[in-house]
Length: 391
Image (cartoon, rainbow, N blue to C red):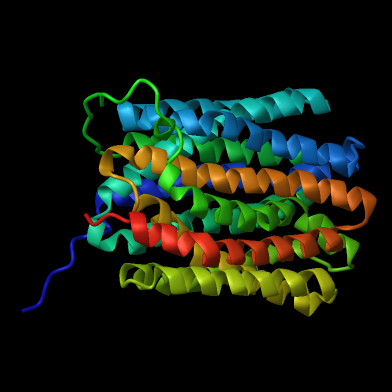
C-alpha cells in the first residue's frame, strides 16, 4: 500500500521562500561592494571595513536570543511583518551615512531587525512544512538564502562597476519592500501567548543544541571571510571578473540541495554533515594555497556544494531536539551560531589581511572547518542522538 506524501509546495511555503530570498538578496547586495566602496572610495583601511561589516552581526547577536523568545510567545506573522518593514526602511540610511561611525550605527540597527526578521521567518516556515518532509523543505528554503548569497553579489558587483554604490542601495531597497509584500500574503493563524518560566536559560538559548552550535559557529568563520573579502581576494591574486565566484558557488549550492535534504529525511543526517565538513576543509585549503583562475572558480563550486549540503543537516540538528513551542528558540540558536561565526570571520579576515594577506585568512578558515569536524565527531553526534525528538 503506497503512502501519499504531504504537499510541500503550498501557497504559504512558496511565499515563505520568496520573502526570505528577497530579504537576503537585499542584504547580500552590500556584502561584496560595501568593503570595496569603503576602501576604494572612502579611503578606509581593511580593518575598519571589517568593523563596519561586523557591526551588522553584532546587531544580529544582540537581538537573536530575545527574538526566539518573542517568536515563541507572540504572533509570529505580526513580528515577521513588523521587523521586515523596519529592516527594509533602514536601507535609506546608507545614502546619508558617509562616515565610518554613521555606517556602523545603520548596520548595527538594521542587523538587529534582520535578526528578528529571520528568526520569525524561519520559524513560520518550519511550522508550515510537513514534519515528514522537514529536511527536504528546509533544504529548499535554505536554498533561497544561498541563491541570494550567490546572485545578489554578482548583480551588485556589475552594478557597482557601471552605476556606483547609490544604485546598489536603490535595488536593495526595492527588493526588501517586495519582500514585505510577500510576507503580507502568508496565511498564518494567530497564536495564543505561551506561558513560560520567568527565569530559565532555555528562554533564549536551546541548551541541548549547544554542541551543534559550536560546530556551526566554527564553519561559519570562513564563510564570513568569503562573503566579505572574496572580490578583494580575487583582485589580490590577479583573477579577473572575480564576481563570477558567486555564480559558481550558486551552482554548487543548487546541485547539493537537490539531494541533501532528502538524505537527511532518510536518516543520513550525520553522514551528510561529516561529508560536508570534510569537503569544506579541503576546499578552503586549496582556495588559500593555489592562486590560479581555474582553482579560484573550482573552489567556488566546491565550497557551494559543501555549504549547500551542510545547511539543511545542521538546521535539523537544532530543530529536531526542540519541542514545538520552542522552535523559535531553536531557530534563534541555529542562526545566532552562524551569525557569530560570520562576524568573527569578517573581523578576523580584515585583521589578518592588514598584517599578512587574505590567503592567510582563508588558510585559517580551512583550519576552522577542520576543528568543526573534530567537534562534530567528538560531541555533536552523541548529543543529537540522546536528545532528538520524534514528531
